[in-house]
Image (cartoon, rainbow, N blue to C red):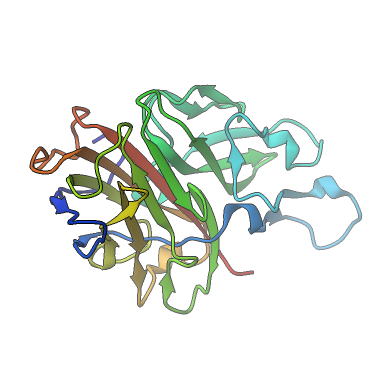
Length: 285
């Protein structure tokens, strides 16, 4: 696919019997890290002077409580001092993440296009932001909360989350990120089968540790697919130890009555629902 470093077809059929859910399936994938997007804090700076009170001598991007520069909400000017123009170059290595189809960051650091896919969730990409020869790596992101198809996806703690990590230690996703997927049409709780396939961009996580869980819960007689996401790495790649990176996952679903779902292609759009999740990893200062 256009931006993913690893593709895993992890489709399975899940059946819910009666009003309880004791059928589950886990699918290995790739990993990254996560924390609540609304409570994260990030400051990035490039210092070229050891003294002097002039704020413009040091190029700094102050994200504050925001995990990223978000499409439709922010501009890069919201986070930098007014010290002259900045330019942007999106990074394209596997650990740099990606934005959704039809959306990109232009040379002037503004978003170009819009979210061009029917997928609920979030995406993030690392972008080189430059001013006067000083370059910083800054996360940009996009979120889409609803779909024309009518199904719902709830991502907790959020569709895009941010987390810090110890460059010298093991890394893992925090805050127990979870996807909850509900069909557009009610599927009776005692007669549901779901299948799914997903692709992952592992970032700095060990691909073999990525797990997308699967359990059907009965909510008022309607089956909801609940999918916790986990990933880790005992030793981070040294090239990622002092820079931000992104873990991303995209999931395709078949949501039908029991027996109607077969194995599906993670690269196909011929499915019932689509979800996305991104975690932005920032090194501890």
